[in-house]
Length: 106
Image (cartoon, rainbow, N blue to C red; front, side, top):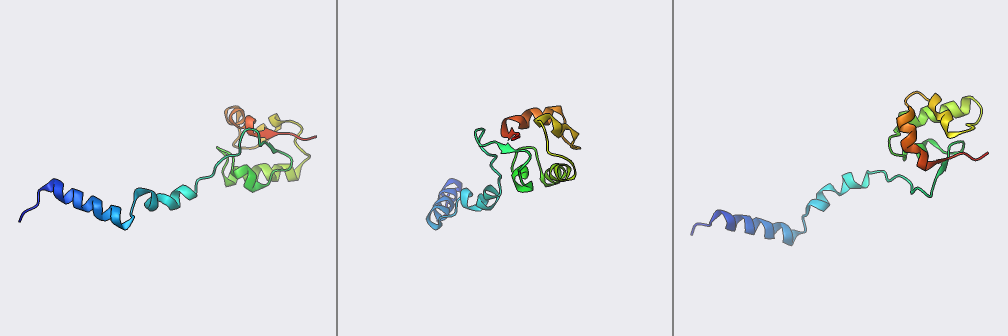
């Protein structure tokens, strides 16, 4: 007895279905590695945020987060969000995208 091509596909599909193998299970590790930025209402204080908090923001990686924290530690506290322009790697465009996640506590 010879199977038609579509019959083989149906059998393969049901084998995967019965064993519980799905694309979601195969990619779950990569999905769990995604960093979710804080909600707009949960702003971080740029004078208190840890390197991990900076790294969680969109467009900020570990290197840039480290630069921000080092600049804050080496000098005085940031007086305004615009003071972040002194950090190498932060320009006007990036700062405008980050502004909704940031606050300055005096």
